[in-house]
Image (cartoon, rainbow, N blue to C red; front, side, top):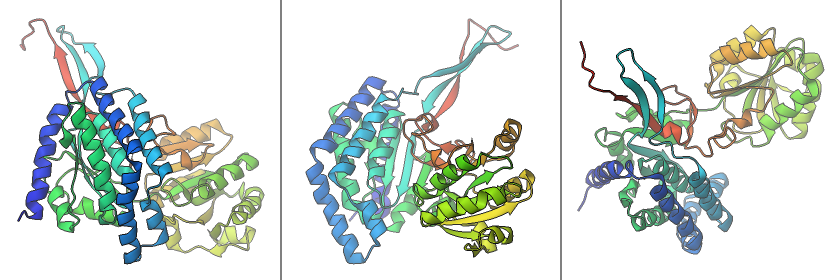
Length: 419
């Protein structure tokens, strides 16, 4: 009987071999495979729903919470959305082979860089079957092989989706193993995967903070990390009050359970008396519980006192920490102490102060007079994303096709030799 280690190692070796082949594929062939993937998802929606029903039934029997069951569910609309997402990736320019920064050296040698795939990307994720299709499409388009290891709660759904994607690769003459799935649900399978440094070039975990920290601690392979999104909006003195209220409500309320939702509101003391009472009223009208500092409580008596723990909490809910600060320096200091390098925004009418905030705040996206909800690959013009990195090597912020590549140096000479 094949052990877990043996079965995972087989998958890793096959993906390594497939990576060398798909890296050479031209854009038309990769797009043809992606088109077949999208078509297969649409045409086999009923079968996908049948496989998904097995996961749903098992999840209900295990007592999975309603929110997790909702993320797990595949409907006709969600299957169509997966297929449409692949179609969007087809429309994106292929980054592989792009030549950058060609320049001539004093000896006549032309030197530049060429964009190339990373190789084999391992993705470890929870709950959402759509990640299987989204991640595979981005990896294939960028010339990478991908090894997918979803959560045990979605094993039937993920395996079914992967089967459709692999068949589309084979039909177009590309290696099916460019999209591989580890169908062993034991935790040991992840441990073996994280030790496969000879076959896997990058690990991208997608899920809760616990999963990401566990992967980062165990992996021998570079990991793209995104522990949490403690995102701040700072309302500066002289801000447009009406605009600031609208932005803050959107940043907190539009979709509170995502990583780019505002978790802490910082307000300059000069702006606080005019801004906080109407802003608090609008937020509370939308069901937001406010937890404020003493200055906030004086202006908004209905708010609850904030604890020190609140400043670093990612609520992922209709809860907001509010603090009045005496200066921009104090706001930036607060962000440095409690932020997660994810997303921060300043609301101001002063261009010089806005540019100072942009320069000094060290997060993956810094916005001026706009909602934190824009830290998203599609919204920022990447077309799609495989996740958001809050580490700076080798990508920072949403990761699209370009971030799934690296560059190598290329040089063209005419007989040059080194003296």
